[in-house]
Amino acid sequence: MDIQDVQAALNKLPLGGIRYLPQVGSTNDEAARWIAQSAPNMSLVLTDEQTAGRGRSGRTWIAPAGSSLIFSLILHPQQLGAHLLPRLTALGALAVEETLRNYYDLPAQIKWPNDVLVHRQKVCGVLTEAQWDEDQVKALILGIGINVARQSSIEANRMADESTLPATSLEDLLDRPVDRLYLLGKVLEEIFRWQPRLASQDFLQAWEANLAFRGEWVVINLGDSPGKDGLPRTLERQSPTIEEGKVMGLFQDGSLRLRTAVGEIVKVSVGEIHLRPASQERGITHV
Ligand code: BTN
Image 1 (cartoon, rainbow, N blue to C red):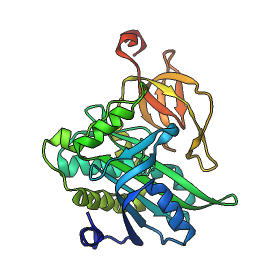
Image 2: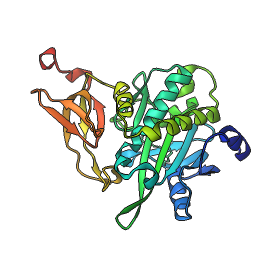
Image 3: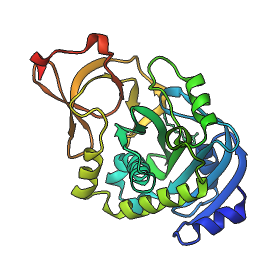
């Protein structure tokens, strides 16, 4: 991958600017630096190798050279609509999910709020971070990592703890090489297609229709605390509270709709889903 290839692959897209760096600590950090130098709306930071990437809940996202598609997109809240900030992570996840379905014929699903799964294995993670100017959101960073080559899923599984789902990669799933720049172009096209419709019912329906674990019992780990804009503050942690429920769908605001064992409908705004272990599966009495 080099900057000429990147520019050629993306030249039809209305990006604000492109920075390609062969190796970075974290593309989200590079995006934050660029924001400090007035990055235009829809600027892209792309790398071939990420050595200190971040995930949610303090996890790391390391991508060996050539193994993954790793990028961050900078968005300006006034162009997005400040009330839509909590939907940004879903925008990234939906764009990846639709790309994998439409262009790779993979049965991708969105694990609320920020992962993309295929066959219940994680292939992509999304991390949205906000840059603040006093108490105003100055810019948003939509960071996306997709496991492309087998080496990326091997690395992810090596770093995994017992709460994370197993990782897979596009090459594990497709058994053929995948062109990362073609993939990037398609994901960005989907982002540009959905972004103007972020507030629409269509967006919510597309997100809900592709939600992983619908109708299944899950355990929610409420380990992340919400930020000022409703986005999880990834570096702040509270002691986790565990809740359980059956995934029913989404509320209008994008929160997760769960039904508890006593039939109560619960709203989950932040947190992470963990599938209930099969050994503790609830019986049909709770349906
Ligand atoms: C997660 O699974 O918890 C989210 C992972 C997000 C990883 C991406 S890779 C590009 C961007 N840069 C980072 O440091 N993190 C995100």
